[in-house]
Amino acid sequence: MSNILEVSNLTKTYSSGSKSLTVLSDISFSIQTGDKISIVGSSGSGKTTLLGLCAGLDRATSGKVTLNGISLDNLGEDERAFVRSQHVGFIFQNFQLLPTLTALENIMVPMELRREKGIKKRALDLLDRVGLAERHDHYPTQLSGGEQQRISIARAFSNDPKILFADEPTGNLDEETSVKIESLLFDLNKESGTTLVLVTHDLELAQKTDRIIRLKGGILQSTVSETSVAE
Image (tube, rainbow, N blue to C red; front, side, top):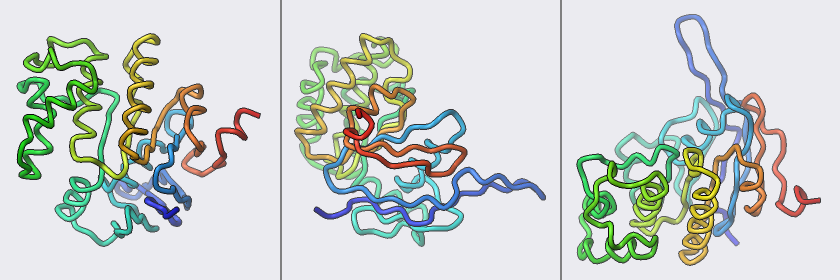
């Protein structure tokens, strides 16, 4: 099976005047198509920074990221945005729904940007898949946290992504809602054959993935399979 994501000697340093802070140092790993991977580590370990670099949201100080065969390192912002629109889905801890748009309209936004046709029907189908077809005309403020995250998940799958990046997708939800969201995410991911890269503090959630990448202080500590963790 081919690799959908390859990370080689990735380093990210932020500079401010004469001071510099290295958030990630010499990170290397690869992810095969269809895998479910979790990235874990304490706050400040570099998890979200790594996710952003892998998804092309930011550019590394040094090293290389290859996403679905495309090298991101020398691409401009517009070029990276185009790659994301074609290949990548996102789910965020704080949902990032547009407050002035309905649930249906929030899902339609990525498809509109891609100038696709038949987007209303597809958006309604996605709403139905996440169990919220009857809430299509509700605004984010009229929805619970769990419902907002369901909308976010539907939106993430709207462009049939090759790879889905999820940053603490259950971080703002209660335990019962978190379990439902986890189940929905994994089910949709399996149905779609999408590769999943998940940042989480929740080790129980991490152990439901195929492999765990562990960071500490911006350094890769280990990358192990779920079975190894269980043992």
